[in-house]
Length: 460
Ligand SMILES: [Zn+2]
Image 1 (cartoon, helix red, strand yellow):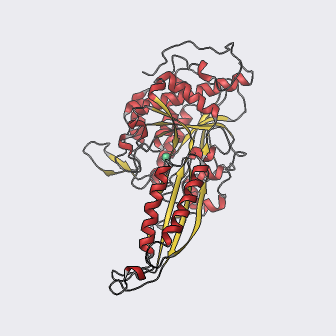
Image 2 (cartoon, helix red, strand yellow):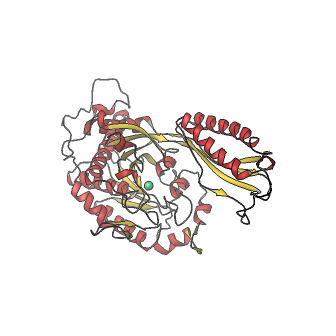
Image 3 (cartoon, helix red, strand yellow):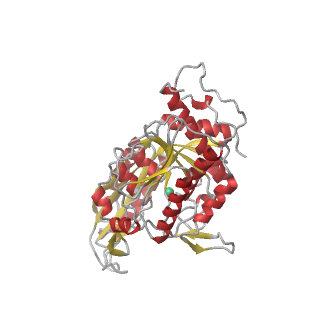
């Protein structure tokens, strides 16, 4: 179904050796993933954790497979069996990350090329976020195995623990530990949000997933990390594209602003005599939206806090609100922040007798640029499968395990469309065709990368 249009495979072209010209490599014509098997496998495994029925068909449900609950343990055991049936070795590290590894032709002990994502979901999640990435990776290995195709270097799959951070509140938790960005003790000590007696570590122990391999690139090194994921947004369908070649993730900065005024009677205090922090905060939020729009950035307020003893007929004494600024370019994030603060200065003195405010930065996550060679391999696959007019370069709006792996190994991602951009919701949906296309792109990207790596290393 997704076999290449051209079966020619040139392994030693005359062109100068450059890793980025991988488009000269073609996946072998026999390597075509099995779309039906992928679809069946994905939905069969969603029986573990199926929840939130929204339609009459058996599969019209979302998912509630929270990290290391009993259903997550069941799908993990199933996954372990399946990869072992394929002849993979399986390693589990101290965070329960599962590494399945298929030997390459060279028998090299060099790190494997990984295809990774996560099997855990949000409490009201869907069937595709994360799950597709792991099932697609499994389908790639199954396809290689049944075609007696061996990559040159080892390839494999990673199931990252607690990507969602829904039960144990730290998202991209275990790829973060692996990358050295989150201390393992902190991650182990995360508590179940509904039961403080249960820690992430105690759940790893209960299910037998507290491995002894160090959770780090030293403990389990990766040569590269490819992740197929649903877009979780509307950009691909809006542009009528089938494959997103993800070049990185946007930078984001979270601020908390606290606006101080003075409580006063709403009936007896004339407008010009007020210090009204809620009015000022409202204007500040509206201004941040205008400024973000001007720069093609995003600015959002998710939380407004007023004192718990606020009342209808009293002007609030103090208001705090959050501001989340995002853009693929860190300079733009800085500019939006500066312009917002300038605008807030002026707003603070606009109404009545004015207000004062202060601000703090809570989180600062710089923009992430994925690896150009991995991107080139995905682009070569996309060009081959759908052509440049049906694929596009894009930036991830959300965090993914790949954001952390990119700190330690060459990484890039493939996006496919999901219906109406809906995700983290039971009705999340991608068509069987799009799931298959993304999986075929994953396979071809990995084969390109492997061939380029062998070529660069003079082993083919
Ligand atoms: Zn995800």
